[in-house]
Amino acid sequence: MPPERWPPDDPREWLNRARGNLPRAKTVLPEFYLEDLCFDAQQAAEKAIEAVLIARGVDFPLVHDLERLLNLLGESGESIPPDVADAKDLTRFAAAARYPGVTEPVTAEEHRRAVAIAEAVVAWAEGRVGKGQSGAK
Image (tube, rainbow, N blue to C red):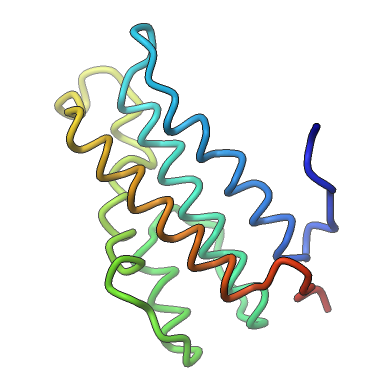
């Protein structure tokens, strides 16, 4: 059953989307490229970070640069734990890694790390936003 939908300016909707990317990121099948699964991990982390930005009332650009988004959070007074700060390493999976021949294939270890980072970021965002809290204005 799909999750309850919220308005697009509600951080809970962004967390729903982040949670939706996580299972895809973890689904390793022979016909799937790990690069594409790492893209889903990156997307989960990105949407979770954006949920916290929305909850804090911080305007942000629609970019895939997770370090830039984390810096905006830090500038707003949010404390960024080290495992969440590692999300900056996922930015490389946002674009180039999804296209043939642009980068080296992703290893199983890189994939596992990408998923672990994404899981940590989503869990952190859930704690920051609160499951029953709306940041919508």
